[in-house]
Amino acid sequence: MKNENEFNAYISKQLRLIRNEAKIAFLKTSEKFAVGVSDFLVFKDGHAACLECKFIKELPDRSGTQVLRHPFGGAQLKFFDDMQIGAVPAWGVVGVKEYDVIVLVDRLVVGKGNWVKRDFMDIINWNIPGACVFDIKDVALLVTYATGSRHEPVTYKPETRKDGIKVMKRTLA
Image 1 (cartoon, rainbow, N blue to C red):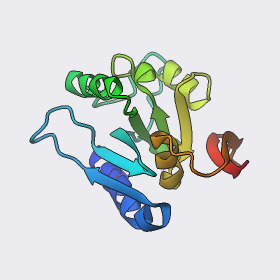
Image 2: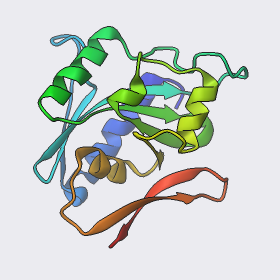
Image 3: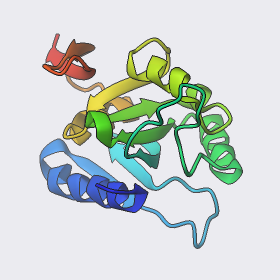
C-alpha cells in the first residue's frame, strides 16, 4: 500500500472476503452525496460502527511533526459527533504501513484530527485509552471490536508480536 486510496481499497477487499464467514455487512460510502460521512458503515450481530480511514506510509523522523498528510476534517469530525449522539460508535482507522498495523481510535482520541509523532507513538504503544492496535491482516477482529458485537464469550487483550509491536487478540472466555 502506498496511499490512503490503496488502504481504503484494501479494507474494502478484506471486508468482501470475510463478510460471509465473519457475518459482517458493510457499505462503502462516498462523500459525493453526504460530506463528512465515514468511509465505511459496518454491521455485525445487530451492531453498527462508522469507520473513517487514514493512512501513514512512514512516520516522520521528528517527534513534533504531524503524522497525517490528510487529517480528519471538520465535516468528518462533525459526522463522528452526530453518530455518537445516536450511540453509534464512530472510529478513526489509521493504517500504518511501517508497522503493518491498523490503529483504531475513538472520537476522543481523534481530537482535532491529527497528532504529532510523539503522541501517535503513545497510541501505538497502548498508552492512550480509547485506542487499540490491530495487525493489518486482522480486519475481522477490528470490525467485531469496533461494532461492539459481543455474541461470543470472548476477551480482548493485546499480545506482543515477534517484532515487539502489541496488537489486539481475541480469546474465548
